[in-house]
Image 1 (cartoon, rainbow, N blue to C red):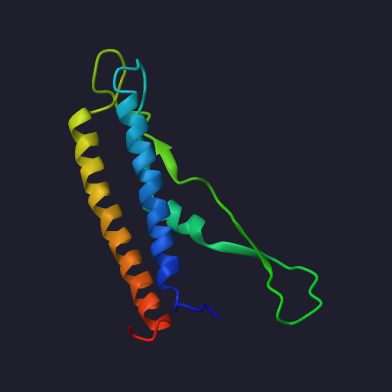
Image 2 (cartoon, helix red, strand yellow; image 1 turned 120 degrees about the vertical axis):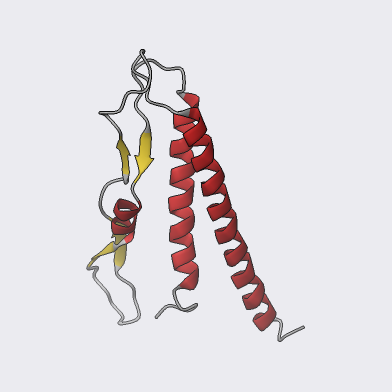
Length: 130
């Protein structure tokens, strides 16, 4: 049984995706002058598939014990190998990366706002509306 209805868990997965995407964009920006560097992207579909968890059966002495859960799959990050934009082989378009970073920052902040709102609501319930 999920105590909070699954919303917080979904928001957590969204934050994981946004964080992974932010790290990937930052890596692309950091390598803007590296010869033969190919931009990396995060596949939402792959991250979503990775979020599905496998259950490992465990020896349980009580029916209330939980099974172990592990993440399966790949990281969801892939490289654009066939794209070249400059003579040195570097494929980083700084304007595009900055636009992606701005978009991802807005997405991340919206998720943080929702998580904060959820916790505020739970705090209000725990305190009895005071």
